[in-house]
Image 1 (cartoon, rainbow, N blue to C red):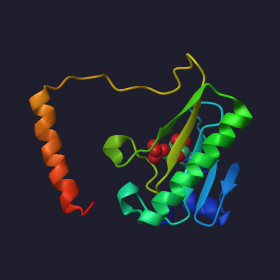
Image 2: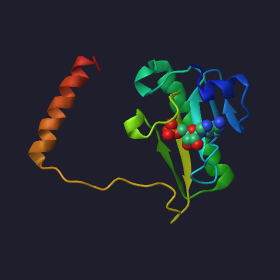
Image 3: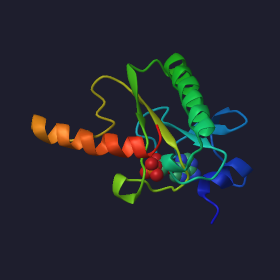
Length: 140
Ligand code: AMP
């Protein structure tokens, strides 16, 4: 199925575009969390971060930095959030990889935050060992 973002790339659906290069496109979110809320997408229709080849991860990081700098220059927010949802449980609605850049102004409460939990040093050590083993298997 063609994603709504692929239809934006093809021009079938209009979007307020702010940046484009050979591999990526950025446009304003239609339901912005704040003024200037922008989405950066790869032109290739890939669902999530784990589906991107390394060169596309790099291209997305570069495009995101470029757009974030432009948002800071143009809108002069006090900061910005980078958000990226993977999977329905994480709040992903559009299954075409995208990075949210959300400009922030002091006190705007534009983005909700997690409730800090707690963990013992033993729990953190065991968890780190489990994850490190998986990193090794991934060949990093
Ligand atoms: P996510 O929950 O990370 O999948 O976010 C999807 C985002 O895409 C939401 O913030 C939507 O407002 C945004 N969105 C969906 N359709 C469009 C569209 N046609 N143009 C711009 N943004 C869109």
